[in-house]
Image (tube, rainbow, N blue to C red; front, side, top):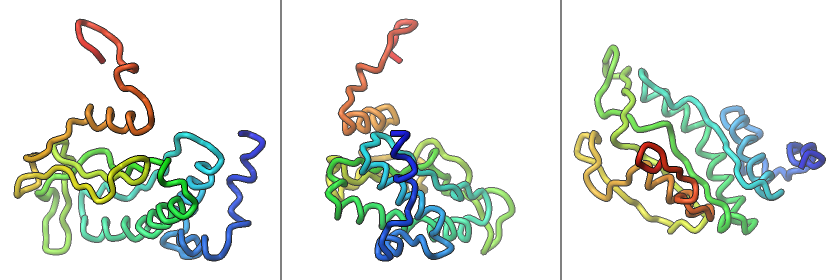
Length: 185
């Protein structure tokens, strides 16, 4: 792999259409677009696990503007990555997982006004999406109470979520556990 790295990380030979698809030539989407394109190129080379990180979602204040800006940086590149993987026949064998560290509370924290408010960390409800890799398209699972505070239907424990991801990657999560102090970890 080391001998291929210069070829993989160079995006100079990509077409104008591909650069446009990922938003590489536009300032708001340039950095994340390059990371998404690099992810596609790594997948093409057979790299089994690729992580693409996008910051800017930890909005404890000014959540409205903060999340608008974060979405502006990632929406087009993500759509470009999914489109590109599908067009190249790679999406069916590539699992794309989008998620964060955890959910957000439905209530605000900090100084509150009509235009500036935030949310706190929230471990009881969270949102994620999957694409490709054997996942049923269009499936929505789960739901919360009216406040988004507690999961109420089709609850998925984080251990089951991890087991599902491992299963989709062809791994048996039970083969990765070990016995300690009378229970499996």
